[in-house]
Length: 30
Image (cartoon, rainbow, N blue to C red):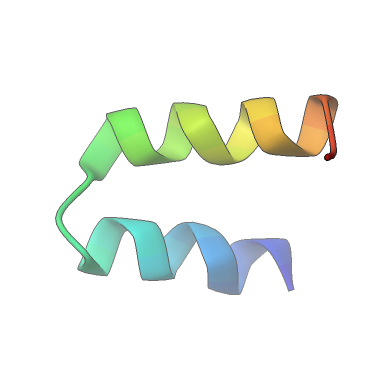
């Protein structure tokens, strides 16, 4: 699930920035 979200962010062209945002959203949901 998480892996799929990360891959979606990378595919969207956000790269590491998108990855960082994904991690933050996981750490601080809502």
